[in-house]
Every structure is written in structure tokens, then in C-alpha cells.
Length: 147
Image 1 (spheres, rainbow, N blue to C red):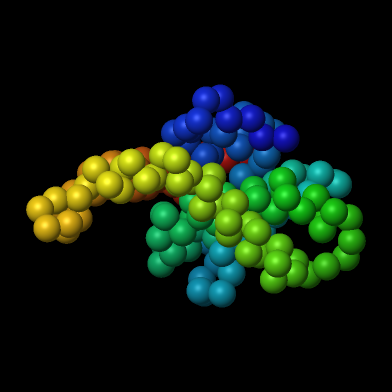
Image 2: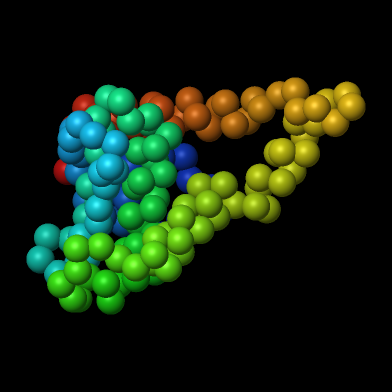
């Protein structure tokens, strides 16, 4: 369903759009709802991300990737009436996010490159750069880009 050219992508919003996954925003105050996904039946595939201003841009990115994980890993969940997936499905979607956003093969050299004297981690420049990029792409989302 989703195609990633090469091993890295720069913008999850564009990645989803390029692969026919609708990304919709919802500004819902509260810290218990972050997002949901809709399978292909009817209006899907689509993701809804809660872009309430008290939820960080990093969490918005995590939520979009988490819901993408559900679309890819659990397509049968959309064929039955269910308000929520199983705990196993949630853990699998979280594991997908981890590998999708920060693959260990790419993360490990970056992490070790930050080691300073006496083994202290002194610079996370690449991580800071990634956070800035995610904040910029999430600004696109909050401006209503994604339909």
C-alpha cells in the first residue's frame, strides 16, 4: 500500500498523500484521543490526527505513523465492527512507528556519533534537525493541507 522510495522520507504528510491515504485533522481538546484510522471500505484509507494545540507536533507525527501501522498491519480490523483494536495490535502499531520513524540501522550510528568525553552524549544535532522538520510538516497539516 505505501511506497517509500529509498530508505528515508522527509515528509509523512506527502508520503501519505502520494500513496492515496487521506490525512485529516481534528482539533479536539483533551489528552485521551490522538487519532484513528479508517480502512478502505467506504471513505478510506484515511487517518485522523488530533491537532489540538496542547498536543506536540512530535505526537502528531507519531499518531499518523501509528495509524498507518494499523492500516498496513491489521487490515482485517476494518472488516468488523470494533470500537478499538486489541492491546497486541496497539503494541504492534507502536513497534511499527519505532522502526518506521527511526530505524535502528539509521539510529545506532547517529546515537554513537553523539558520544562525547567520558561517554556523555553532547550533541543530538541530527535529532534536533528531524524535530524541526516534523514541526514544519505538521504546520502544513494544521493549515488544512491534507484533504
